[in-house]
Amino acid sequence: MPRSLCQITDFTSEEIKQVFDLCAGMKKGEISPKPLQGKSVACIFTKASLRTRISFEVGISELGGNAIYVTDNEIKLGQRESVADAARVLSRYVGLIMIRTFKQSDVEELAKYASVPVVNGLTDLVHPCQILGDYFTAMEHLGSKDRYKIAYVGDGNNITNSWLNLATRIPIDFRIGTAANCTPDADLLEKARNNSDSSILLTEDPKEAVAGADVVYTDVWASMGEKHLAEEKASRLKKYQLNSSLLALADPNAIVMHCLPAERGREITDEVMNSPQSVVFDEAENRLHIQKAIMAFLLR
Ligand code: CP
Ligand code: NVA
Image (tube, rainbow, N blue to C red; front, side):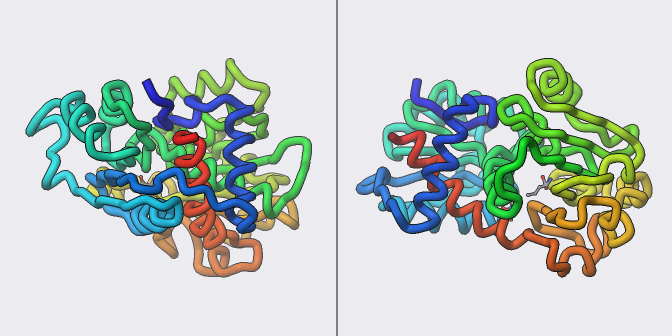
């Protein structure tokens, strides 16, 4: 079975370091591998996307390949035929499969039956490419430190869960400030607490989470697939808004991160998003570089 990236925990700490080295080399233009020369990549989207779609398509082209964008209208994954059969068929045509969908189990099933690498471009559970890119961005801005103090305020979602995954591979001091019923995945939280050198704090006090942090991260309060809960979540999470007074509690050199798209005025204010501390567009750019590195690593 080829290697895939369904979750960050599919990679060891050493492999993540190799991906970061590849990413840095490609971003600086020192290396430009073409592992997709003469190959195509199926990019399956059952949810909306700007960054993931465009950065994957550009990245695939820069690695010498050809991207085929498909929506679930065509594939109807798991309905028209089994996920396993779709995996077997796609593997006869393409050199890699990238998928953004709802169920993590669909991505794992695709990876199990595909004979080419599968890359998770976001599920309800995790968004591994995002957080690998975000950690790379944090390293660019913060340089070497013993371990970064990373505060996440807002809804405990696929982004929070991916930080928990990363915490099992890279030691971080991760603080989650969220409401009682908006907590991240319990299993991933337990694994991060029990199987890592990271420290994990879950608190209902956003100030406790942010105090002295090097990175202050937030994301939308209602993710794709749960936009019908937007008002309910907003009322639960409004004290977790990333605004200037909350940010003032972080380290004075702290960076502000958001995976985007942002709902300005909800989870993050314009003032914070536009402040010199905000690196949100660097994160967006690094999606391109990290995904090229992930694909090159999987196809090596
Ligand atoms: N951050 C991110 O994945 O953006 P898109 O939803 O636009 O792809
Ligand atoms: N948590 C958000 C991330 C979007 C990139 C969502 O799943 O909609």
